[in-house]
Length: 230
Image (cartoon, rainbow, N blue to C red):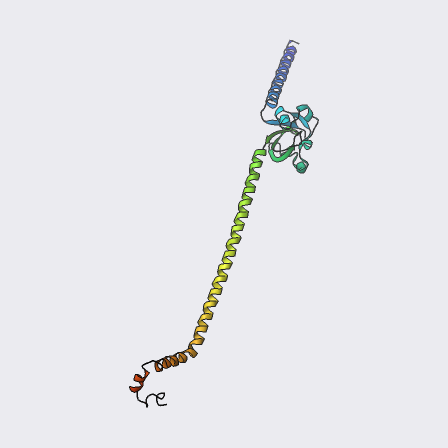
């Protein structure tokens, strides 16, 4: 009996120590959860809030008690409802998604939500542990960057179009100049043949009509100049 009583006392003491360790662990988790500057929540596998810390409630403009009556679907913008709850595929993974939450005054904020799964004694998924970060500032910067890039792309496109138009005009002018040169070459060639005898006759008439043509006639035999024989 004395041996059995000793064993019983040891078992009770061990159980008390185990219970105390559980209580200490729970208190540490509570303090870490409630006082954490990072927004956190415990969520059922169906998306119902089981616990919400003050930072997340403050982010959404609500109280923790109000949110315990809500689900993640209630605080997620309807447009992003399919991204309200993203449980990881395995118990050892952590999922991440970005979605829009709706605040109590109906404003929208972009949030990044990380989710891990807590398991029970049978290593089966019990609930999700989520951390929520406000990423609205980064989203605004990304939107500004996208708009800036879009503006630059539009400007570059306009410059490219103007360059291509200038190139088309340059080629058109070059083609027109080439045709003009070709036409002038052909015209010059075609006119050279009939103009040559005309120019020669003109030179001859010019010589005959000079004021000193009498002197030229005296020095020229009528036999060598048919014009003077007349």
